[in-house]
Length: 145
Image (cartoon, rainbow, N blue to C red; front, side, top):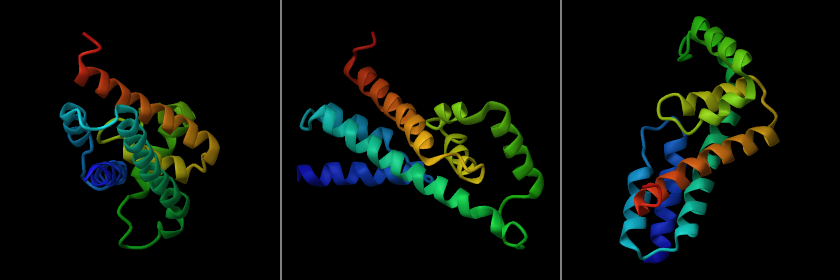
């Protein structure tokens, strides 16, 4: 049963990092509060799933532009240009915001469109996502006051 909890957390975190409307924080908090699971294991699994979900967004972004001229393409040229402009202005450090709801997932997609180098992308996104889960765990456990 313990393996199922980690497996479920991984897929919740993975899905939450893609453009799907999922959330992993509530599940992580519930597993921490249950006091039945190793904290570092939970944080590792959640971070890994979330980073891999962001990697899917980056990969899709790398392949996205070739479909821009299609009628079904979901992003207007104006929105794409605006996103590019913001990314060019703030650069790869904007990926530190990849943990945020609403803007984080599209940001990782735009990083792919902008051809952000994979190594730097993974480093910054892993830093941001692990910090988010770490702070959430500390808040849950009362370590931050």
